[in-house]
Length: 143
Picture 1 (cartoon, helix red, strand yellow):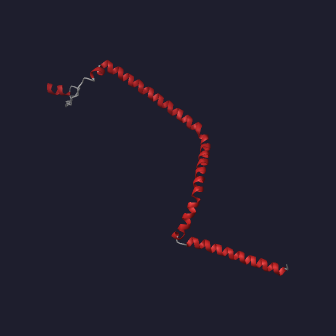
Picture 2 (cartoon, rainbow, N blue to C red):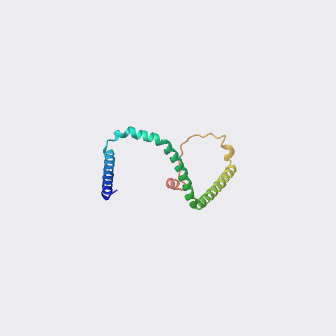
Picture 3 (cartoon, helix red, strand yellow):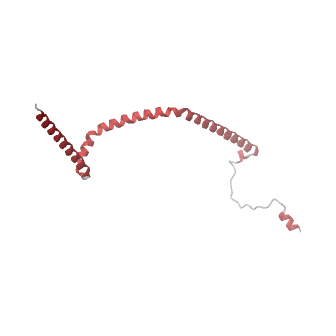
């Protein structure tokens, strides 16, 4: 091969390569500006073909993501555990206070006799007339 043959080959190669690049760019730009429904059948076939792979990929990515979420969450577990223990102790103390008050209430009901009478009592609505506990009315009428 002579120098001129090499030059012709490289010139042809460069020309074909540039032409190929320009054609590919025109095709890509053309697809970008085409109406959306024009490629819908091709798009549907593509999604139908790749759906099994996307389902398997999504399942495996979810598992891996869950693993790493749990791994990163391990650092906050002691702090959360202390918080829950404190909350549990607060709730237990509140429950003990409530039980104690309930027991006191039952004792007072027994002493006052409300425990036995309550079942046989009938409640009747009435009007209540209130009088002052001070001697205001008495002193007014005594003059």
